[in-house]
Length: 228
Image (cartoon, rainbow, N blue to C red):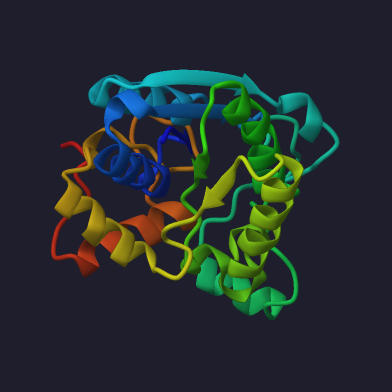
């Protein structure tokens, strides 16, 4: 069996890549990185470094034009500032009734649909992506939820003529639990990038930096990507 892994260069997708390689062997795994018009290229650079580390085929797709109408704070054209507070605090403000400002409209839906076409063309039978429970909490990122994953899996299974499935192996796990698994797999977290800003070092202030640091601390260690 061959697997296509959505690879953003971050913690979750890199762990999903490591998991797929362990299960199927690197010769049967393809990494797919997708640009969505984000403010920096650090994520893509990290995904390339991770693919090189594992020695897997790496593909790239640019979907930036699809998101040109969005004012999501992560995008190049946005007039919004990236919030410097945790997801928990952002969810408190929304009351868990709408996504956070860094939610890119239906991004995972578009990523998975595009990946399905590529996966079928490359004779893959499964797509892995790194959605986890922390991101789905409080409707912050609704396209990371169990309900969304189930619905997309059904659609892709039917739409591919029962040739292709999707798997979100961490959909019921916290980020700390994802990292725990990744450490057991020997995932190269020092090569990953999560920060929403594109500086030389992670900003330490955006929600993804805050949550990432907390998840490593929960595993009794400092983030290996933060170099002195």
